[in-house]
Image (cartoon, rainbow, N blue to C red; front, side):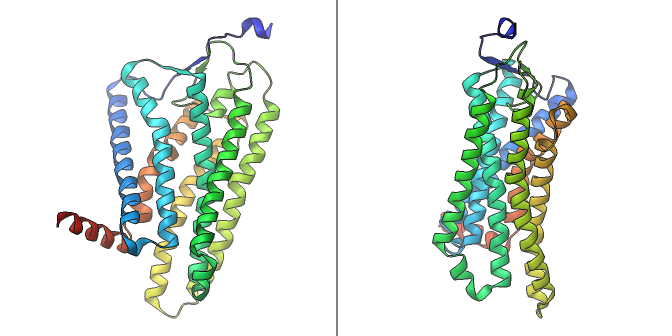
Length: 310
């Protein structure tokens, strides 16, 4: 009977997040503005770090990777959402849905581990400054970043392979603005409890392990900063670390809310709002919070702009 009720039209329907009321038209325009700003901010960061030799350090290389991940993440969801809203064509193919899931899960996983690497970088820089060039040399830095991309991609491959192996029935209407796995599972004809448990275990590894590294790193950093004799050095260290902790709090808090709850406890409206926060708003905030307010970045931007005007 399950196979009789299952449709073989491999298209899903994304219900989206906006309707055509005046309020939602304003919110949609706001999202497009945030998307444009996020694209510009993250692109500027990547180019600036590439062009300015004085920014060729592990910390700024890691920042450029964060900007690249944010750039790819927001481009995974917003263009399709905008196309659906403007055209009214809400269908997404099975291949398109699988591509969204793979990119989305891979980038989230890679960013989780990258944020842990960034915390370790600040720990070494503040607690072991004399050994920084050894503990965070170019080879080690590139290896840790590559590992973040690989672990994220493996997570994406596993999740998309299992998620698309289930049969999906009925109207195939996904109550979301992109193909998010928890929303997709509600359409399955079969019991997905085992997969939900697998996802929970993956979330423990991909979220809680990096969070543990981040907390341990910053506890050591806080102790070291308190013991600093220089008030200026203490202020600079706290400014750098507070920016990172702000990004970590926004990112991990939203991700845990979405992926570490059972499907039965989910509200489509809540999931869409929280997903919009960390897939649309966070990529825009990261360049502001973490990079563009940095004095060295501002100096580098003036230098590059001055070189361009000449």
